[in-house]
Image (cartoon, rainbow, N blue to C red; front, side, top):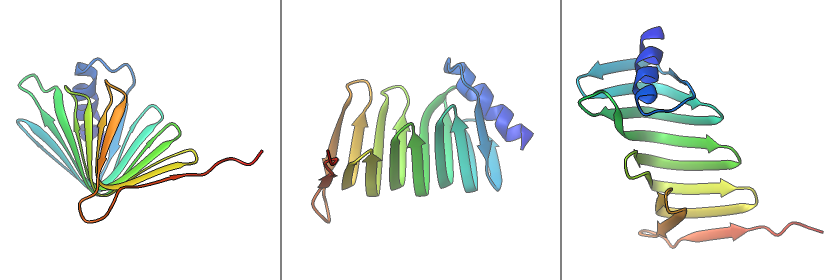
Length: 144
């Protein structure tokens, strides 16, 4: 446990994050350019939590994270937003999150469901695509 937390901490500190990262999983594999967490994975940074069956962190030559890939029952909780998908890929340099397979974002009384969702964090925008089904949005108006 201490080894995996230490490795992830080093990786994210290299990015300049001031908050620590903690990680839990049944199995951790480490190679030259990637960390692979398997089985009941849970990563926590501040108030953000990522849960999945498997998480892969791809590193550059200086062991800085380039990409984070989460697979299988992915759930991300950030403040008031909850996101779900079968597959999530986060390109750290571009600050773009790609969600695929039963992708869903719930924020307050708003829901977005699609086959694919692209979140462009720097631009504060998103694109949702329906492949096997149409994009679905729900907005529940609060009672006055």
